[in-house]
Length: 191
Image (cartoon, rainbow, N blue to C red):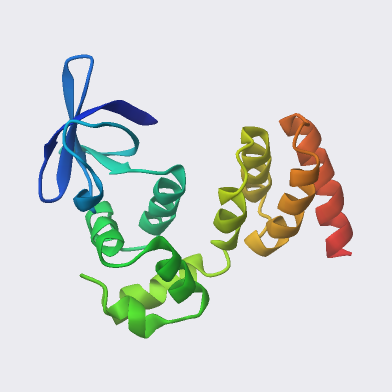
């Protein structure tokens, strides 16, 4: 996967941009083009969507936006194009609030989102987005890696929020040490 592309913005389309890096122009599906300036340098974080008949890059200005996009397309029946349309219609914070507050009415107003998909978004993502907010303020990759490892073990976002605060106090530790601390605290909390 291409983590990011850093280069000069040479083309701004309606729903895409082209970033030139080392003489190669990368076509990236992108929304909110009004925030970008032609011929300036940017670092665009990417998500590569590969299907039998398609190999497409989707771009974001921040890792948080990309990670949320990945969670959004994990919802049953929601593809990358629809997710990008959602991003063009609402801010990340508004979307998270709508999901956490069961605001299906607001979600139904988003482009190409019906009642069934809006309900599915809430069902699949509610309670799993809080960790994103806590990670935003953490720049330590070890902490992020440890939180992801614990999440993959089946711990819920609400449980990981408490652990992320403990991790921030021990940010200089290695990933395996943070995981051990996390497991001890998660097991104590479950008793």
